[in-house]
Length: 309
Image 1 (cartoon, helix red, strand yellow):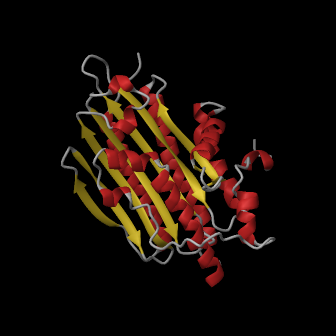
Image 2 (cartoon, rainbow, N blue to C red):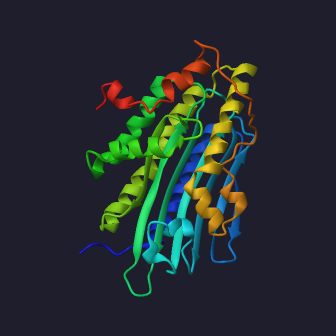
């Protein structure tokens, strides 16, 4: 008999995940600390936003925990589940975005989440989602391989094809259709995950959540001391514009948060502090800036190409 959904266990895990990631990132930065901002949602629930800014390594980063609830599912959550319209629901998760100072350190994003709805005439319906993705400004092969190798290891206990499916899903999801380019070099993405075995589904979310910092921290430590100048900084700010465009146009979490009456400051904390848009900017051929889109942002099979299957 499968285990019943345990919302409290998920909540405790998520709060611990938030704490662990903040502690690890503070240790990397060495100067700045995360401020802690608790908030309540009038319609039900609340959360804890933790933000780091103007650090030695991190220009801005947010690691947000939220647990919100209501009597009627938001439209964004019932589009594919019309039978849940009108059902009481809970949604909880940890979502984070880290924007480093150094253009050679990629921006990273991660999210793990849990939804549960209880129709008045039926059993609770739950699903998990999440993943993480990497957005470099100056691509480095070994960083991309490490990122994907860590992601694959997190998925391996849950089926041989799990990494491949989630990797492809990530490439499809984090794609700017109006630019005809990926947001970054991908990673993992999954949604609506429910095999009917709550314990196994919860374990998958935990494996993905726990592996994020193992994927990201070594990259940050390797690249945070690299020298850069005005040219690299300028390009970083320009490419950050793509990040903003995705979050405001396509991101499901942003849409759900706004539609469900979430806290705007927490929903939009992922936006970078500085960004620029240049009209019709085209990198010079043969430069590292050109190589970003020509080589790195192409939905590449990082592990297959490096014989790591």
